[in-house]
Amino acid sequence: MTHATVLYFASLRDAARIDAEAVQTQAADLAALYAELQQRHGFPMAREQLRVAVDGAFARWQDAPRDGSEIAFIPPVSGG
Amino acid sequence: MTHATVLYFASLRDAARIDAEAVQTQAADLAALYAELQQRHGFPMAREQLRVAVDGAFARWQDAPRDGSEIAFIPPVSGG
Amino acid sequence: MAARSPSSPRSVVAEVKRFHLSETPFDTATLRAQLLDARVGAYASFEGWVREENDGRQVHGLRYEAYAALARTEGERILAQALEQFDILDAHCVHRTGDLAIGELAVWVGVTAGHRDAAFAACRFIIDAIKADMPIWKHERYADGDSTWLHPPQ
Amino acid sequence: MAARSPSSPRSVVAEVKRFHLSETPFDTATLRAQLLDARVGAYASFEGWVREENDGRQVHGLRYEAYAALARTEGERILAQALEQFDILDAHCVHRTGDLAIGELAVWVGVTAGHRDAAFAACRFIIDAIKADMPIWKHERYADGDSTWLHPPQ
Image 1 (cartoon, rainbow over the protein chains, first blue to last red):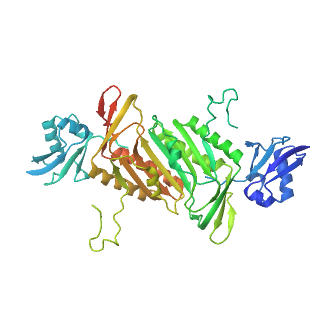
Image 2: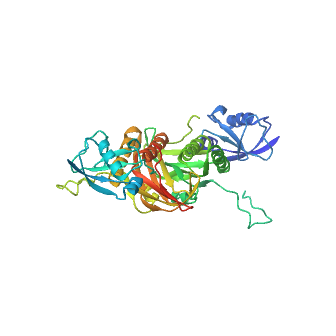
Image 3: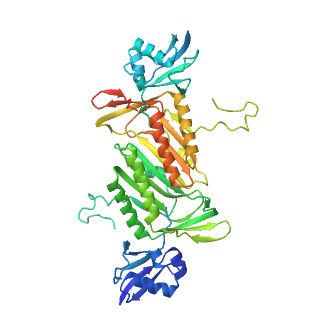
């Protein structure tokens, strides 16, 4: 079982109604973790629209969640 | 006989040792006028290196000098 | 995060930060002055300002939200890449967060170089990369009372 | 030169001047502020600064001489052409004349647009045209005591 913190931004946060949560997961990779959380919160966005970051750096969907890490799902950005 | 004022800038002024002069000329066009003044002042620059302006606007070498006009020979520029 | 050596705190310069987030309006004249250098022949800058209209809708104001930790990492990465990829002397960028009114400055990019080709190219590269990769989201409020997060297809 | 109608001096706006020569150092923050407009999404600017070195020679200072009447005509023509050719909102330019020290600002171009493509393209077009056509000449003084007019092949 992996313990991690998940951060939500922009419309993902609006959908989750929280900006962060502690999660315990048996997901093998970050893609599976998103699938879990998408089901829990009813996120409308497909994983293919998102990027994922771990501890303040972009990561790969096939990376395994690390214990104690901070994970963020990044919806399409609109800065600049 | 056409009366005009000729302005000199940058290295042309250094060569002429004046920044303007009143000229009387029978030159048929501005190219011929430059040839006259080049001979008088010993300008090292060939006409092909220069542009010519009349009364604050670029002109053509085949234009005839106009009475009372202000003529400038424009050496290669280096602003910006 | 600051890279100061504990053994010689006075002699070691803090790690250079080229990218910043700002929660308040910031002054581009001061930012420009920080790039002054006798080797500079060309300074190119870009600014994004909040427009009264976006995609045909009248905008009343907007809010930028950032994932600050990742934004800082990405900002430094983008600017370091510009310094490596183009013949420039320096490049800085500041991005606003929080609530902005029409006409306010959202982002500033400043690039110095010996010559203008590299200054222009790097400035364009940086703002394009900021728009593509920076984890910052725009929430727009419209004249009709509607509001939305902008999540353009990438 | 100002196009005021003698019959209604108060109601007629003076002819817009987008290009200026300046015999003294000028402030880009003020010039930028003159371009503020709620329709602007993108502001691109370019500045030329006096470098300590040119073509491998150490420069002590320089002087810009202009044929002012023609420079003003050409400046307005170039900026009007940029406004016609690119999807921009406004474009201004100021060029220094007289004596300049290392680090001083020689030329400033500021362009506003709805979007960045046009702002960058117009800004680049303008500085290129200024360099190609503006009747302004640079006289450089070097560390070795030599000095010369720059007449680069066009």
